[in-house]
Image 1: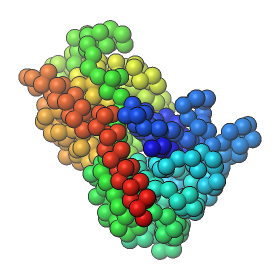
Image 2 (image 1 turned 135 degrees about the vertical axis):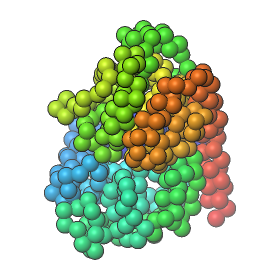
Image 3 (image 1 turned 60 degrees about the vertical axis):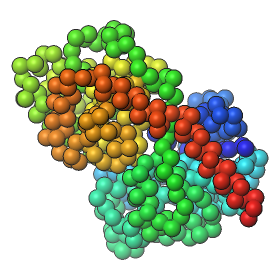
Image 4 (image 1 turned 120 degrees about the vertical axis):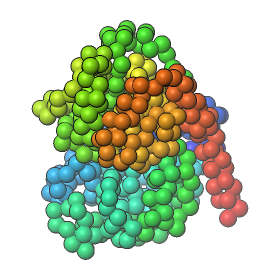
Length: 424
């Protein structure tokens, strides 16, 4: 069995990580698995570059930039990602695709595979699996839907577009996808139950075969480690109660729920005013220094952490990880810190309930309630058996998200599709 994974980037973003991690997990199970990407930021011998050479690399880069320019023209200035499939690449005649048994598609936006480019893969006559890392495949362009239900029909009247009407750009993109999908068969992998339910509601893909298989991670890297030693390595206070969060842009951020987190922290600080000197907030990831919010505790910024071993040390240094995302498929920060035995406080939304078991390995707060988020932090702060929460966090990941478990579920799916293909 030889599998090829297709993704726009290698290791960038959740989908980039997921495709590489899944491929490695499959390799450990004896499967020939490779990854090919449309744009490679730096050389990686483990990844096939579909835009090789100076000319093709920069041609691809121009396509990505032009797509972003089109967004500025047609899309409102909102923190809601939207893709306009204006440029793409026909890869159906590439030798690497001819040589594999099954094609596994992941995230293919940013001038990679437009709907019509995806449809051309049908000529290869190979089983195709498509993992949905966000909602774009079944919407008229948006990647994050929030409360919008237009995807349940045919999009149009899009609240994200500057020019919104029944036949607007979102409806036309939806129609492009509808025509393309009629030409190609594929099986959908939904990493979370929430994503599977969303697909089932969409007019575009609700009748397609789908299966819920989560993303995986290397539990040999993301594993429990001495908290004291982790804090020593990072230069953090040894005796404080440490709250940790990742990717903290500004109070204006919408998707990651920054405003709710700040309000929750302020409420928690007011309730535990006398103990405030013993609490510290630690943040890793990018930060917008121009719009940096004020926090009620001493706050340490660790910057962007690209090395996975060091990221695991960060998770191990914390008493609790805070994930206030308002909509997320299966966020890796939550999965990674649970694998390290660090409990999570998060909103009950998206795929997060697949990972966080309420009051067993963390706390699921009422969606968009900063008060309940504060209650969750307080519950963690006061919990008499933190070691039990830590053990539960690790055990849940090993049972449902480990490389062996996830790889085997994919192998079962691949075998089923290949057997059906042969007998067809």
